[in-house]
Length: 452
Image (cartoon, rainbow, N blue to C red):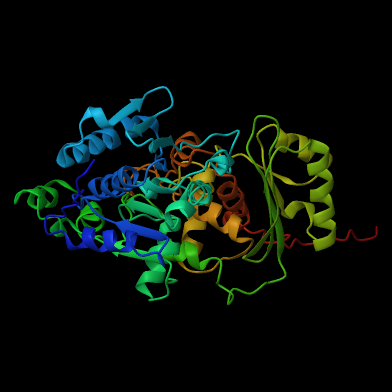
């Protein structure tokens, strides 16, 4: 084109810091954690489009959770960057059928819809892509598997030709997902590896914002939203009805001071055709191990494996609980004496809770926040449990007029993009904590008839 592209940050030093990291070959993984108005989209579009225009025949992706968000928000930002650089339609074409921009030099920018697909729960569909570099926008909406497989696609297309390091940029608002544990917390503790960087940005860093912008946020947002979206406080969650503290959730996997008690239980969320995962938790007091986490299983297999676990761990039938959605009935009919969990039945404390599942869920949240649960499992399962804990929320505020109630299973699925099977297993375990304990046989006088 015979001219130089200039990324003018207009005084935004945080954007400039990310641009320097983008040019640093030793850094391959960058999180730009901006708040409202921090210039996240403009930054991402500038870096991706700048590379695509500079290096012929290279491939890039911009990924968001839904195609609708790509159309509504990302594509207008790309056009904005092109306009600022004077890039006219003579230099690019948008392919609406396959969702990519093709530039005059045969480089491409692919727009990736990263929504959850039940037939591809591990996002393996991204593994076959061959990209030069990429950007995940609104990373707080992603799960680790999506990020990992998208990242695995970069560094595979002409990086060797141009000696380009495989770069992944993630932009987000403060989020309680894997970004908290992998980026924010290590950054705060000065433990980030040198190839991974975290850049925190605030609205004040964006010098192009109107003077009234921040004032409007402070006036219209809730206190928790202000903490997260104006002050960049990662310790705040956006939803005041969230029942657990995120640090307490993370601590569940390192609470080694929680000791076994010898009181053993099994809780299981069953899976069959058309359902999600079969999850089994074995408990010694409040120490939980997860020996089984898999997809569809035949009823006979579940019956035999649970029976084997119960025998090996010496768990009595009365200390086994399973969900009662059809499969639970099947299991109970063969493993006589186990407890079926009917989440919609009346709570033990019916004055306080709307149903038994809600009562168990609030009990679980209480024990998590008190650091009284220790879960021993693989890192992959840890991540799934952390994700599912983000939907451990009450349906309403804890007012005196309303009974405490958990949000519905359908709402949880919509928020997660899948069924919260690990959370259900943990909730069911609490039935043994809230059930009134037997007081034993009452004493009675024994009258011995006298001889006549």
